[in-house]
Length: 179
Image (cartoon, rainbow, N blue to C red; front, side, top):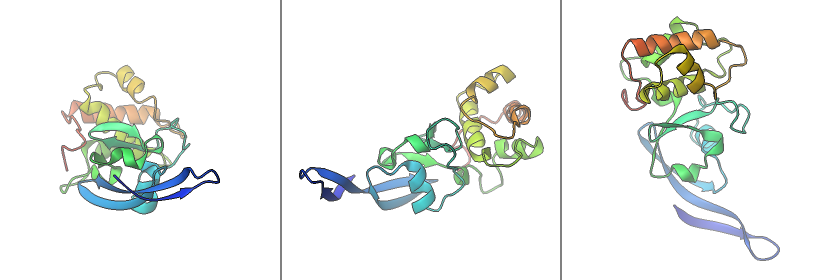
């Protein structure tokens, strides 16, 4: 990350700094000039046009913005874009493979694991990660490890059923398994 511009406040202290940040998103490298305060969520949506990652609460409480950073789930609204430099970012757009939807995506469709669909990308990203973590052993365990992802429509039973099915089919759902 390189400092490329800064402004000074009335006391002469740097107030806004922009940096050149190179992000690897869904296997592709993107070099962006960003304010250091830009979140990963805003960089993905506003600068890269990857709008599958949703902006829900913008406070880390709903999980709609869940993405993978080096294979681990993170809330993109609480992660600065600069923190993702040199790391692999996977969004909902990068989960499916050339041969079709990821097994979790397919299970969500089969079990109607969505109603309005707003939370679905974050739910799927979290589900893929929890399966890779080996935390899909029981319905109770699935509910516990998905508790950070809220669904306004209350599709929780269908979401749990979808994750249970994908897990029972042996898909460990690693975020990079199908990329």
